[in-house]
Image 1 (cartoon, helix red, strand yellow):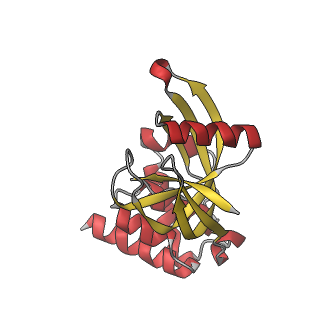
Image 2 (image 1 turned 90 degrees about the vertical axis):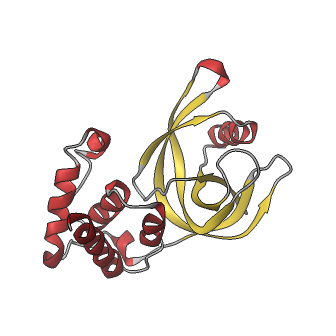
Length: 193
């Protein structure tokens, strides 16, 4: 069964919490259907095109998300908060008549999903994350992170580090815990020089 896609100029990772303002009819319909059926959708990074208007080109890995809160906003807008649950590999994408993208979405499981312990060699990553959590933009995660868990460290650092979307997408697509930890360490080193 095909899954609805929500292309953005943002990469989300499992555990990410993101507020969205919905105004395009195709996405208002999508959210209404998701709330009615108690299901989610996949957020995926745009590779070419825009968030508004014609369906953009997208990457093949995104994140399945669920709606955790919603409210009606002024001007016919809908405000929602979503939480990312797991990574998903996308294939066979199609565009509906209303412009909504659909694709086969298969959960993309990696060893990180088994919530391995953070290797001692990468404890400095936990320290970096603790510093980032002092900033107002990261407050929502302050009491939700297990600093001994590699998945918590990897996903939150990937989301919060001030790096570009291409680097974040590369992190989202990593297949091993070691790859993600190594990439994060390289990004942090580059930011500090």
